[in-house]
Amino acid sequence: MKYLSIIFLLGLSGIAYAAGVSPQFANPEQQEAYETLTSELRCLVCQNQTIADSNAELAADLRRQVYEMLQQGKSKQDIAQFMTDRYGDFVLYNPPFKLKTGVLWLGPVAFLLIGLVIVFLFVRRKKAEATMPAHAEHGNENAEKLAKIRSLLEKGDPS
Image 1 (cartoon, rainbow, N blue to C red):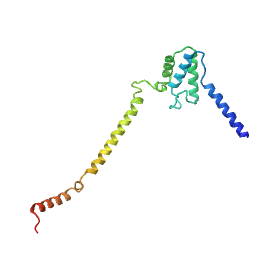
Image 2 (image 1 turned 180 degrees about the vertical axis):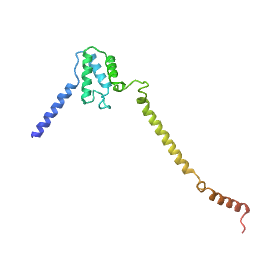
Image 3 (image 1 turned 30 degrees about the vertical axis):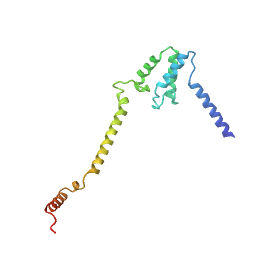
Image 4 (image 1 turned 135 degrees about the vertical axis):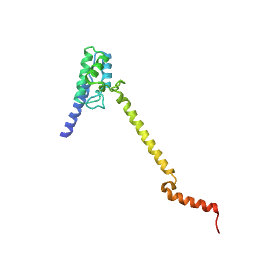
Protein backbone atom coordinates (compact mmCIF):
# COMPACT_ATOMS: atom_id res chain seq x y z
CA MET A 1 0.00 0.00 0.00
CA LYS A 2 2.90 2.31 0.78
CA TYR A 3 4.37 1.79 -2.72
CA LEU A 4 1.01 2.36 -4.36
CA SER A 5 0.65 5.76 -2.70
CA ILE A 6 4.21 6.71 -3.77
CA ILE A 7 3.42 5.76 -7.38
CA PHE A 8 0.19 7.76 -7.19
CA LEU A 9 2.01 10.85 -5.91
CA LEU A 10 4.69 10.53 -8.60
CA GLY A 11 1.94 10.33 -11.20
CA LEU A 12 0.36 13.49 -9.86
CA SER A 13 3.69 15.30 -9.96
CA GLY A 14 4.05 14.32 -13.63
CA ILE A 15 0.63 15.80 -14.37
CA ALA A 16 1.58 19.00 -12.55
CA TYR A 17 4.83 19.17 -14.52
CA ALA A 18 3.05 18.63 -17.84
CA ALA A 19 0.58 21.39 -17.03
CA GLY A 20 3.44 23.85 -16.51
CA VAL A 21 5.20 23.04 -19.78
CA SER A 22 2.98 25.07 -22.11
CA PRO A 23 2.53 28.59 -20.75
CA GLN A 24 -0.66 30.49 -21.41
CA PHE A 25 -0.73 33.86 -23.12
CA ALA A 26 -3.32 36.60 -22.87
CA ASN A 27 -3.10 37.04 -26.63
CA PRO A 28 -4.17 34.05 -28.82
CA GLU A 29 -1.75 35.12 -31.57
CA GLN A 30 1.15 34.85 -29.11
CA GLN A 31 -0.09 31.43 -27.99
CA GLU A 32 -0.19 30.27 -31.61
CA ALA A 33 3.25 31.76 -32.31
CA TYR A 34 4.65 29.98 -29.23
CA GLU A 35 3.22 26.62 -30.28
CA THR A 36 4.43 27.07 -33.86
CA LEU A 37 7.95 28.09 -32.84
CA THR A 38 8.38 25.32 -30.29
CA SER A 39 7.27 22.77 -32.88
CA GLU A 40 9.65 24.18 -35.53
CA LEU A 41 12.79 24.45 -33.38
CA ARG A 42 14.96 21.36 -32.93
CA CYS A 43 16.22 20.24 -29.55
CA LEU A 44 19.99 20.49 -29.83
CA VAL A 45 20.46 17.73 -27.25
CA CYS A 46 17.98 15.18 -28.60
CA GLN A 47 18.37 16.24 -32.26
CA ASN A 48 15.37 14.18 -33.31
CA GLN A 49 12.75 16.06 -31.34
CA THR A 50 11.36 19.54 -31.32
CA ILE A 51 11.79 21.65 -28.21
CA ALA A 52 8.05 21.19 -27.61
CA ASP A 53 8.49 17.40 -27.42
CA SER A 54 11.81 17.23 -25.60
CA ASN A 55 12.30 16.93 -21.84
CA ALA A 56 15.96 18.03 -22.00
CA GLU A 57 16.98 21.00 -19.87
CA LEU A 58 18.20 22.90 -22.92
CA ALA A 59 14.81 22.45 -24.59
CA ALA A 60 13.11 23.80 -21.47
CA ASP A 61 15.48 26.80 -21.53
CA LEU A 62 14.72 27.41 -25.22
CA ARG A 63 10.97 27.19 -24.56
CA ARG A 64 11.37 29.70 -21.74
CA GLN A 65 13.41 31.97 -23.99
CA VAL A 66 10.77 31.80 -26.75
CA TYR A 67 8.10 32.62 -24.16
CA GLU A 68 10.04 35.63 -22.83
CA MET A 69 10.78 36.96 -26.31
CA LEU A 70 7.11 36.71 -27.26
CA GLN A 71 6.19 38.54 -24.05
CA GLN A 72 8.64 41.29 -25.11
CA GLY A 73 6.68 41.65 -28.36
CA LYS A 74 9.15 39.99 -30.73
CA SER A 75 7.76 38.37 -33.88
CA LYS A 76 8.12 34.73 -34.93
CA GLN A 77 10.63 35.78 -37.59
CA ASP A 78 12.68 37.73 -35.04
CA ILE A 79 12.81 34.76 -32.69
CA ALA A 80 13.65 32.29 -35.46
CA GLN A 81 16.40 34.62 -36.68
CA PHE A 82 17.79 34.96 -33.14
CA MET A 83 17.87 31.18 -32.74
CA THR A 84 19.56 30.57 -36.10
CA ASP A 85 22.09 33.34 -35.41
CA ARG A 86 22.90 31.74 -32.08
CA TYR A 87 22.72 28.00 -32.94
CA GLY A 88 22.91 27.84 -36.74
CA ASP A 89 20.40 26.55 -39.29
CA PHE A 90 20.44 23.13 -37.62
CA VAL A 91 18.18 24.48 -34.86
CA LEU A 92 15.37 24.72 -37.42
CA TYR A 93 13.51 21.45 -37.89
CA ASN A 94 13.11 22.32 -41.59
CA PRO A 95 16.26 24.29 -42.44
CA PRO A 96 16.23 26.48 -45.56
CA PHE A 97 18.00 25.17 -48.63
CA LYS A 98 21.41 26.86 -48.72
CA LEU A 99 24.91 25.78 -49.64
CA LYS A 100 25.58 24.96 -45.97
CA THR A 101 22.40 22.92 -45.55
CA GLY A 102 22.60 21.24 -48.96
CA VAL A 103 24.07 18.13 -47.34
CA LEU A 104 21.06 17.88 -45.03
CA TRP A 105 18.67 18.07 -47.98
CA LEU A 106 20.63 16.18 -50.64
CA GLY A 107 22.46 13.63 -48.47
CA PRO A 108 19.57 11.16 -48.15
CA VAL A 109 18.86 11.38 -51.90
CA ALA A 110 22.54 10.79 -52.71
CA PHE A 111 22.70 7.74 -50.43
CA LEU A 112 19.53 6.35 -52.00
CA LEU A 113 20.93 6.79 -55.53
CA ILE A 114 24.27 5.21 -54.58
CA GLY A 115 22.42 2.25 -53.06
CA LEU A 116 20.26 1.81 -56.16
CA VAL A 117 23.33 1.88 -58.44
CA ILE A 118 25.07 -0.74 -56.29
CA VAL A 119 21.99 -2.99 -56.34
CA PHE A 120 21.64 -2.53 -60.12
CA LEU A 121 25.30 -3.44 -60.75
CA PHE A 122 25.09 -6.44 -58.42
CA VAL A 123 21.94 -7.80 -60.11
CA ARG A 124 23.40 -7.20 -63.58
CA ARG A 125 26.61 -9.05 -62.67
CA LYS A 126 24.70 -12.01 -61.22
CA LYS A 127 22.48 -12.15 -64.32
CA ALA A 128 25.55 -12.10 -66.61
CA GLU A 129 27.17 -14.91 -64.64
CA ALA A 130 24.00 -17.02 -64.84
CA THR A 131 23.69 -16.65 -68.63
CA MET A 132 27.39 -17.22 -69.38
CA PRO A 133 27.89 -20.44 -71.42
CA ALA A 134 29.73 -23.27 -69.70
CA HIS A 135 32.40 -23.54 -72.42
CA ALA A 136 33.48 -19.92 -71.93
CA GLU A 137 34.76 -20.78 -68.46
CA HIS A 138 37.26 -23.45 -69.63
CA GLY A 139 38.75 -21.59 -72.60
CA ASN A 140 40.91 -23.51 -75.07
CA GLU A 141 40.12 -27.01 -73.83
CA ASN A 142 36.45 -26.70 -74.68
CA ALA A 143 37.23 -24.92 -77.97
CA GLU A 144 39.36 -27.91 -79.09
CA LYS A 145 36.59 -30.36 -78.19
CA LEU A 146 34.05 -28.29 -80.12
CA ALA A 147 36.34 -28.18 -83.18
CA LYS A 148 36.77 -31.97 -83.04
CA ILE A 149 33.00 -32.51 -82.82
CA ARG A 150 32.38 -30.18 -85.78
CA SER A 151 34.94 -31.96 -87.93
CA LEU A 152 33.37 -35.35 -87.11
CA LEU A 153 29.93 -34.01 -88.00
CA GLU A 154 31.20 -32.62 -91.32
CA LYS A 155 32.95 -35.86 -92.33
CA GLY A 156 30.00 -37.92 -91.37
CA ASP A 157 29.83 -41.15 -89.40
CA PRO A 158 32.42 -43.73 -90.72
CA SER A 159 30.26 -46.71 -89.92
